[in-house]
Image (cartoon, rainbow, N blue to C red):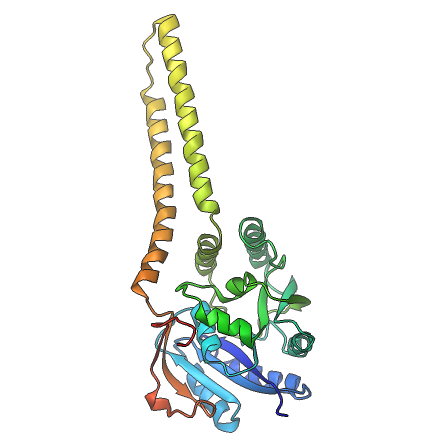
Length: 331
């Protein structure tokens, strides 16, 4: 019988310095694992020569495939592209910066072979700066509290998913899906293994402060109705406070007959209510924008080129994949 195939999904953005190092160390880590592997690199619109470095790897190893996206779509769409184009009986998704050690792969495969459909590499300690640790901790604690209670406390950057999990994910209709969090909510038999995340060896992270903020907003809006409930609660409290204040004014006028002055207090109330209304509209707009993208059926990514595609048997020049114009299970 042939060995099972594991697809390694590796999204890359401006990782020219790291892809060869990642390939070398990962090849060393998997050589004694009794399964077959393919390396599926996704070049997410890099502005350096990441694609050229990946082509050199593909030329010397027929296990290497490359998907080149037409522009920078972001890490989540890049991962979705890898999931859709993977050929393995299971996939392992990890970054190319080696902050997540390739030695995890053996443990992930072992857990999968034991019968788990989903295996998470849960982060223990982070080799990041204090600033990054603080905001990562705040982000994950917030998400655990309002959206995904079964998320590891420090998050997860690496995961293994069986073929049936991948097929279900690929059939989902969401345009703005966040792969790991979406898969976390699918159920199935899941296990976690713990590891300490290392410091980055070379290059700079594509996750800027504002990129992390945008990601946090995406997660909250996509996986939780807490903002909508918060809006309702704030609106109700504002109405109650307004009613109480109106009653105070009426009673004061009846009993004391005084004219209530207070231009300053009126402006404070007006500005406060207006601010609440603007925030409310902002939350609603976030939801409406996502629904608009769903209706317009915008592609999550566009693959404009594929290289080293021995498994697909297609010439690189013929490949222009606009995903997911059709999101039915057989697309």
